[in-house]
Length: 182
Image 1 (spheres, one colour):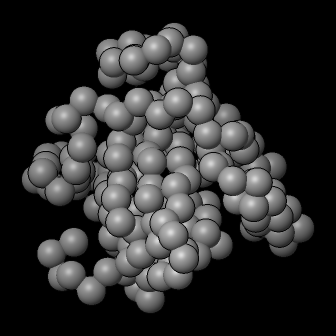
Image 2 (cartoon, helix red, strand yellow):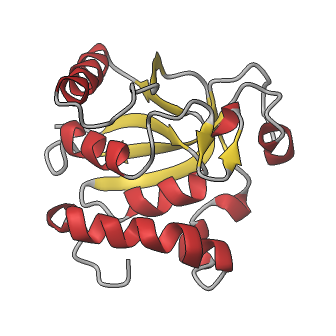
Image 3 (tube, one colour):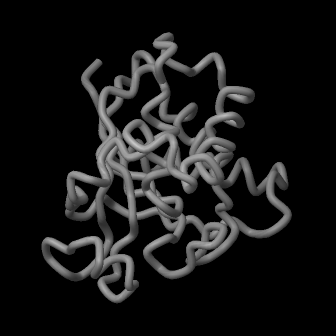
């Protein structure tokens, strides 16, 4: 099986990147911007909310090692997919919940997964996650890449990202890479 690509947006890309980098079968994670109208957006433009882009991560994964179903489970359990344009203290369309698929098969799997969550009443409010075909993805500036790995001692990482990592380790230990440094 060949690698696949999917793009997830679920608030600040520092958090999402840190989570997905820990999963086995995930070969690369790139923080960036997608879903907007401005070409080659920069962080200052996107963070102001005026470009239409979402902070997102592009995930390259090996579906023979980690399934899209598993990636979706992690995605939906590590952010609140019921709050439009908001994740915690991050407010604006750049922090929306969205999945940008790259194949028709991914689209169907995503829609079926959301329907299953809805049928099971997994969340007390309706899921507002956008499901769209992948648009142009613009990698973020270099200082945003591997942010958690490079800045673990920073307060934001300790207060916001560390609890997400702890939850991931507790709920999805079977999906984690064996490398203890992650």
